[in-house]
Image (cartoon, rainbow, N blue to C red; front, top):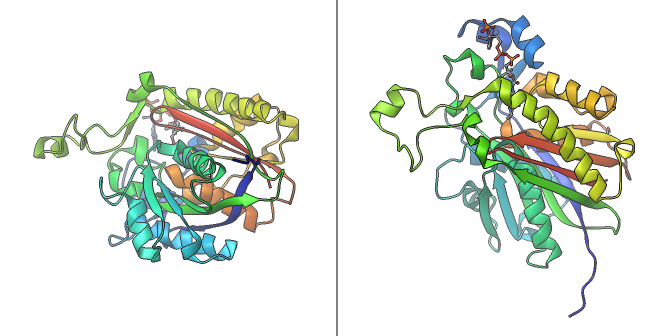
Length: 330
Ligand code: UT7
């Protein structure tokens, strides 16, 4: 059988965020916090919150339609759908199957990936491998979250950080030399306790008692996670660049997971890069978990911040722990 080197890249992108805006001033009325604390400690000014009747697949479909339009392809050209999420509509069936049905796609297989805030990078890498191996031709990769449903709105340590949204890309073969050049992925389960949703799984099924204790809400040891995020995301960028025989001097734009502006400032220092090389939109959307990178990617592309031939690095870090970086020639 003839083997041919294939370049796999992003043929189109799109994002969707719910209409409802929750500002820091709105949060001042809910918990003991201030706009000043949230802005200076995180960089977030406002975030979007899904309507009561909106679930993750609804946001995912809206982002996906935009990505399909941007790539100028019909839904029927999609053979693989991956949804990166940790706030799926249901534990099963997968959100990807619900998306498939809503888009009316007949001839595709579909599944979710759960790797928290790194899930979009993981999903991109999995889809790339399937296309490279001729298992499929065109993939729809979506990061989508309605994280607000697992946030404790009485806990100021966490509720000010998060937002809802979805971003999507169409991945397929592109012109040789363009597209994904290299990827670095990692995980460290020994630090699983740092970010978790304690109840609702097989370890601690949901009961009246777990709900009473608020164990179905997301918990995080923020300080510890902060330090690890800076170090590991910076190392991940360098490792992925090295794999592609590039260095930090080659970077035109970094599109990082949007968790905290202070994490991005510290990364810029570590990587000796000016902040202008970082795409930042966390002020408008907060941390949208697996959706944050595809949302930022689409915004950067539509704002004209990425030119043909540019080296773009996506980098994420999150619960698991998980992390990953992908280097793309646009
Ligand atoms: O997406 C996955 C990856 N996640 C992340 O990367 C998040 C990483 N962590 C962070 O971004 C930061 O650690 C946080 C934003 C979560 C917290 O910032 P921090 O600078 O690490 O604050 P802290 O937790 O050390 O808290 C400092 C103080 C505490 O008060 P005391 O004990 O010093 O009196 C907190 O109680 O700030 C207090 N505090 C708040 N005050 C007003 C915590 N949250 C708030 C709040 N408003 N919302």
